[in-house]
Image 1: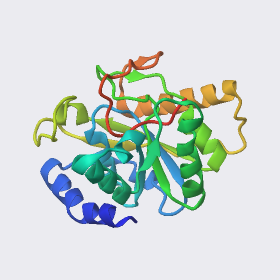
Image 2: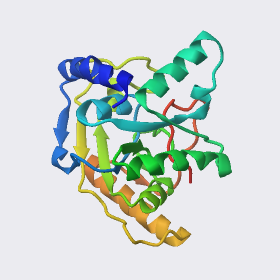
Image 3: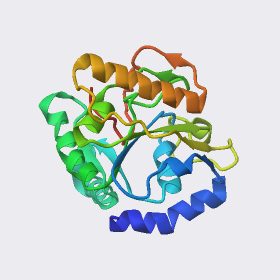
Image 4: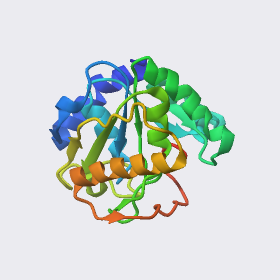
Length: 231
């Protein structure tokens, strides 16, 4: 586990559990060993905080590559923090550059690491669950690891879009883990990837009870630091 992540588990995580007392359901579906992908809904920047808090193992989140390339004191600090947390840089522009995140994640997953992604690609603007992008299942098929659906409830009220820090008492937070989805041996053609992605989103919807929107979420002008897998 990266040093900075370890420090966070010993300091920030206990503080969050004490202040917010999140309810955790389905923790038995989180593997004690071996690689896996956590694919969840995305309501708030706080999703990463609470997911990392309740999962006992290290979780590698995908972060915008820009946060690794900043200049000045702020840029160097951002790079230091994300590198120390074991984040994986991803190019949001897509294309060959975006696939470098896959190049980094596949060996990590095959080596027994956990990676967290948000198939919607951005935070939900209205609390509904939007169509998922296929990157998460493409990664699962390539690495030969299961996908664990994750449902976050209440984080959009605890830390609404535009709010800098979570607000204790604003809402009850629940983190739900679904049964692992094993896509081993499935084809990685476009049709199959779409079908598997829809299956993942269906399982997430069952965990959250959100209204499902069969189209991609509109992009935000100022996206969150943590990015999703590319399409």
